[in-house]
Length: 216
Ligand code: G3P
Image 1 (cartoon, rainbow, N blue to C red):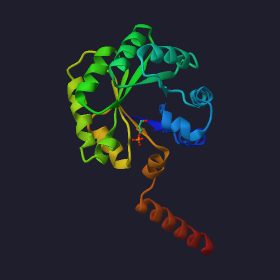
Image 2 (image 1 turned 60 degrees about the vertical axis):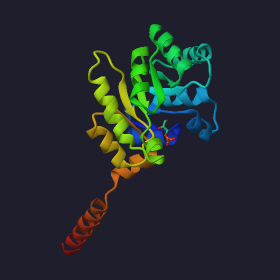
Image 3 (image 1 turned 135 degrees about the vertical axis):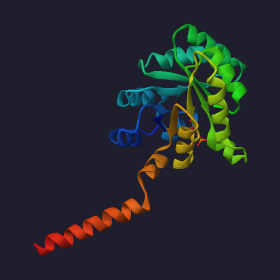
Image 4 (image 1 turned 90 degrees about the horizontal axis):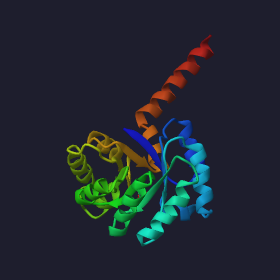
């Protein structure tokens, strides 16, 4: 399974890229707004750092507006992929963009039926949101399992991006469920590095080594 980073913060993307942990970067309007910078500038900068796909989301509510935004964003760099929210207008936009060879990621997917429609419209990726389902007492990982099962019968299918990840356990559950990609906030990537036994193990090795060198 590939890991993408779920942020528009360039410093965090650079840090994660140094770890070899960034196969792509996903943003959304909330994450872009948090940075307080011009949308196109942020996407251009991220798409220079990250070799894999960089996801930029449209904000129009009609398919004509979505398509027009998508064409401008896709022109920033060849690795830019367009995120389109799941709705009728979004599906129309995905279909048109697929016909123009512009890759899309259907986002805000909360049911296998929505994922199936996105696949049929020609989306290259679908993004089911685990955390937001868990937040309302539904089992997010169950949605991933269902989408994997539905897509297993399709000849040509989108890649599944587990989104709205809240913990390292979410990442591993998504991998075990057969997800292609998890897009992970920086905080969760840093959490994935740490384990208390690793920390205490390193501290003990250092202490023993210092004692050994002091005796020489
Ligand atoms: O970018 C889509 C998704 O990952 C957002 O996650 O934490 O806002 O539910 P969250």
